[in-house]
Structures are given as C-alpha cells and as structure tokens.
Amino acid sequence: METGSIIMIIVFSLIFICGLTYFFMQVGKGGKWED
Amino acid sequence: MAEVTRERWTSRTTFLFAAIGSAIGLGNVWRFPYMAYDNGGGAFLVAWIIGLLVMGIPWLIMEFGLGRMFQRGAPGAFAGIGRKWEWLGWWPVFVAFLIVAYYAVVIAWALRYALSAVTMAWGTGQAAATETAGFYYNDILQLSSGPTDFGGIVWLTLLMLAIIWVVLFFVMYKGAGVIGKVAVWTVSIPWLLLVVLVIRGLTLPGAIDGLNYYLNPDWSALLTGKIWFAAFSQIAFTLSVGMAGMYAYGSFVAKKGDINNNAMITSFSNNATSFFAGFAVFSTVGFLMSALSIPVGEVSASGLGLAFVTFPAAISMMPGANALIGVLFFLCLFFLGIDSAFFLAHGGVTAPLRDKFGGSLAKWVGIVCVAAFGFGVLFTTEAGLYWLDMVDRAVSFYGLLITGALSCIVVGWFWKPKSLRDHVNATSDIKIGAWWDWMIKLIVPAGLIFVVVYGGFMTDIPNAYGDYQVGPFNGSHIIWLILGVTLILSFVLNKVRTRGEED
Image (tube, rainbow over all chains, first blue to last red; front, side):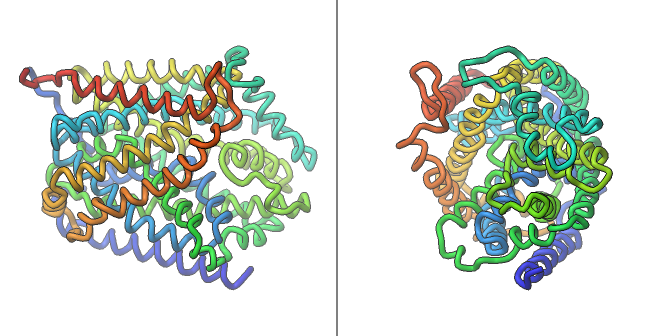
C-alpha cells in the first residue's frame, strides 16, 4: 500500500476516534437531559 | 383549540440514533467514496473535514436549534422568526416529500436485489460482469425508451414499495418514541453489515490497489475549485440538512436537552461511516479491476451503477459465499435507506403538517404514507428511472441547496442568530461562540451558493439536463417547473391559517 494511503488511514481514523471520544466525554456537562 | 401534544424522544440515546440514522444513508456508500477517488483521494478528505467544520456542523446546529426553540417543524420554526417567512419552511417540506417518494423506490430495488441474491439471479462467475447491467435495466427496471414511454408498472417493484410504506407507517404512527427505538436497530445493523463487507473486501485480491485509488493523496487537487465544490456538496448532501426533518427532530428534544454536542456527535458519526464505507466500496472495486484487468475508470464506482451493476458483478466473481454476501450487501442498503426514509416522511413532512393543521399523528402519518406511495408509483413504471433522475436533480440538488442557503440568510441577516446561539448554549454540553453567527451569515450560504452555481446553474442553464424530452420540455425545464410549483405551493401554505392562530 502507498505510504500516503497509510498516513491517511491513520490520520483520519484518529480524527474520528478522538473527536467522538471528546464529544462523548462532554456529555452531561451542560444538558440536563440524559438517559 | 386543544394543544397538540408534542412528541418527545424517550432518551438522548434514541435521539442520537435517530439523527445519525437519518444522516447516514445510501450516499455514504455510493457517493462519498467515489467523490474521494475523483477528487485527489486523501486530499479530498482534508477539504471534506474542513467543509464539515465550517458548514455542516453550524448548519445542523441551526436546524436542531430552531426546531427546539420554537417547538415546531421547519414551517413553524420560520413562522416563529416571522410569519412572512413560513414559506421558507414549507419549501424543504416539498423537497422531503419528493425525495422520500423516490427514495423508497430505490429501497424497493435494494429489497428486490436482496431476494435475487439468494439465487444469484443476475449471473454467476466472470460472465456476470457483462450481465449485471442487463439484469438491472431489463429485469429490475424494465427500462423504456424515454420519460414519456411509461410502458407499464413493474409490479414486483410496486409490491416491494407497498411493503416498505406499510413498514414505514407502523414505525411512524406512534411518533418519535418508537422511531428512536427502531433507529437503534436500523443504525446498528448496517454498521455490523459494513464491518462484514469491509473484512470480505479487504481479503480479496486487488483490494489494496482499490484503496490506493480511494486514499492516496494528490495534494495539488487542493488548489482547484473542483475539490472544494465536491467537498462542500458532499457535506451539504450527507447530513440530511435542508430537508426540513432536522427541525422537527430538534423540536422533539426535551427543553433542557443538549443541541450542540448532539449535532457534533451526529456529524462525526455520519462522516466516520462514510470513511469506513469507502473501504468496503474501493476494496471491492479494486478486486473487480484486478479480476477483469480493467482500469478504475471503466468501473462504475458511484450512484445506482455502483450499487446495482458493479457490486453484483463483484459479488458474482468472489471466491465463495456469493449469495450470502449479496444478501448482506443489499440488506445493508435497505437498512441504510429505511431510517432516512422515516426521517424524511416523519420529520420532513408529517410533523410540519400536524403542526399546521392539528389532528392525530396516526391520521397524518397515514395520509403522508398513502400520498408518497401514490406519487412513488411514477418511479415504478418502466420510465421510472428517467423521472427519478429529473426529480432527484430538482429537489435533492437545487431544492436542498437553495432552501438551505435562503434559510441561513434569513436567520443570519433578517433575524438574530445570537438569540438562537444563546438558546442552544443554555442547555448544551459544548458552548459555541460568536464564530457560529458568522458561519451562518456568510460561510454556509456562500458554500451552498457556490455549489448550486458551480455544479448546477453553470451546466443546466446553458444545456438541457440529461437527454430527456417531455413534449416541448427538456430536462432542465422539468427541473425549473418542479422548483417553481413547489415554491408557489409553499407561498399558498404560508397564507393558510395555522390552527389556533388569530385571524
């Protein structure tokens, strides 16, 4: 596999995993409507 | 007059699943991967993420926020801004109605393919490569010679369509509570199926070549207008904004519920799904290229052609479990489509009508299901694909983009975006700053206008859209006619008295 493709897989996987992890860590800090 | 009880999501989880399910649809599989391949691979992903941050998320926050603030669907939300703006909420309701009318037919085709996969009815082995197009056009569509040559109704498609609308009725008639619970399954199941398809794809010969086409970056593409057009258009189409439904979905959120963080989770989940689906698509496209020794340019890698011609051919040539993979792939398409369909039908159409006229939810759900099924019959005729293409261009491209741009302009310049920002910040986990106001005032409408002019008017005004002729009208005329009629109907509804409103 091309190096550029590998870098893209790593970078964008990290963006989505870190982004969603951060958002879920914020749950409950403002809204009062939780499960 | 008695107040109509507002539907509510039963929990934050069910709301998130419903919103994510509405955003994730067939486009995540058949549009996004091809856009990446065609626009610089990994470089496209950079433009696409920027588009998500500056356009997609602010726009989604606006739609969720307005719905929650005014406790109404799109028309009621714009009537809340100013009675004269209510039409701007009705126009996307017509967009949603027309989209779901043909979208349900595409789901019906997917169901027919899932049944056909059991016997591999489109052909087996390498020979299938030349047979799948014929199966799609001759057996499934029974395609006629042009849009006025209706032939007859394709009865098996009509039967599937009727089944789909019955299913949609039973999901929707009790409102958001049931929709949210069903969405937990209709989001989870296709994700599991995508995992299976990605694993199957990656273990095929030639898969890596396909992934290189999908992901290897060509950074010079970032200096062209084409990549930014592709990225912004993908963001505009992928989040299910501009189709009225997100206002209603936001209006079902509890009054102290979060808006901003939910919009961010919905957006990131949607885009992560697109990114992941690209592996299933391009590993399989790479396998097909390898098996047939053809370049990627000769493989139909997007849209209906990808789903109903290329994938069946690839499935036929796989070394084993062909029927199983075929059934799983088309069930995946079915589940991806079905929650977008009840989002469009319920959030996009039923909720606004009930807000306006009152009455029971079941009655309005029944009316909308029968009406959309009735209109959808057009797309089950032998000329259905031609009409689907024209209606899709009119509403899913022009309607969505124009109403989206106008909505942001009205909120940003003729109202008070700060009051909406204060409203959503009051109960949200993540606070948004004044930057959001400027995204709504400038960036989102500018992005949408760029897409509609660059990708639409510049081609469809000087040239006729497609190769269609309906009496004296060409394809572009039909598009302008659909937009004009739906706009006039929106103004008519603006004039109609809302239940409980003083004369």
